[in-house]
Amino acid sequence: MSKFDKILPTTLRNRIAEEIRSAILDGSLKPGERIIERKLMTEFGASLGVIREALVELETEGFIVKRPNADTRVLRITVKEAAKIFALRRLLEPYAAGQAAVRATSDQVTDIEVRLEKMIDMARQSAILAYMHEDYGWHEAVWTAGNNPYIRAALRRCVLPLSMFAAISGQSTFDLVEDAVSHTPVVDAIKRRDAAAAEAVMRERIGMWEASSHNYLVFQPVESSPS
Picture 1 (cartoon, rainbow, N blue to C red):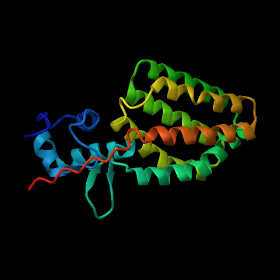
Picture 2: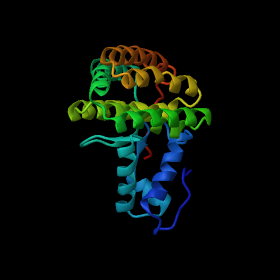
Picture 3: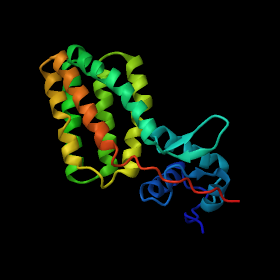
């Protein structure tokens, strides 16, 4: 049975991307499940080009993974993969926070504060996807304020997929408000321009976030491909 209703061929890629995104978030498409472009063409009644454009959008957002010379699948992160991500974060992100405390402009500090307020607001509304977007945006704002594009690029590559996987798999496994508030000490240290405190608090918080991530890093078998 098709997972999707046919839609008009003139529908833009964002409509298709939204349908697939919703299917991922509600569990109709499972983590690790294969995405077959020609099957989507039939289900949506759309051209291959439009389907591919929609998938590029979802890949950019971190919902799906397309590897060279391989197939496309819904994002899935195992406990072992997450451990590697957090190992890198423990090395780079505290340094980035310390640099933000030293280098951030007044406008960047204000932006980091405002983003935290938005996170807390989304957490109180239990808006998991919006919260994860705000959470990732807060982290990237800290990396950007540190004024090192290489560290920012390295952290973006590993943190974005983890953030999106939390949105896909962690909807009822951790307290959003508690998670949001846990970022406050980092903001306070950056506002005080205390690099050592910003590094120490960020390192501590990464340990907390890694522990909480085990609640949603549950392996789900990949569904067999249709014949």
